[in-house]
Amino acid sequence: MPSDMIAELEALIEVADIDDLRLKPAAGNNKWSADLMEKAPGRPTIGVQGRILDAMSDDLISTNEAIALLNQVQRRIKEGTDGR
Image 1: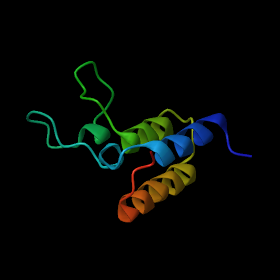
Image 2: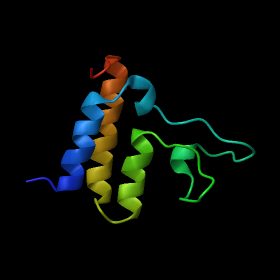
Image 3: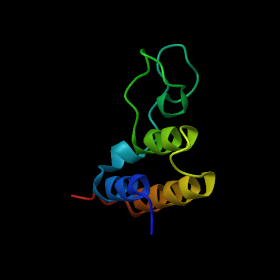
Image 4: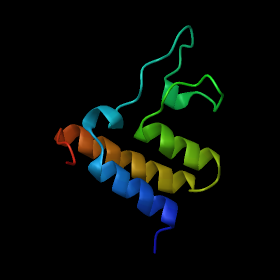
């Protein structure tokens, strides 16, 4: 049975707008996507992929679980359908 965090992220993937599923663009002079930045007070809003990466880095989900969730995100993006 999946953990509450996995269930929450799976539900988020299903209902999120396509734009929220895509990696967020880099902010300011930082060459990395906001989704890939370390947590900091000035970090821009992150998307679904950022939330998955944060959960993995916080050890709330495993690397394999994160990969499976990111694959679900990519499938939704390829389908191009909003969850609403």
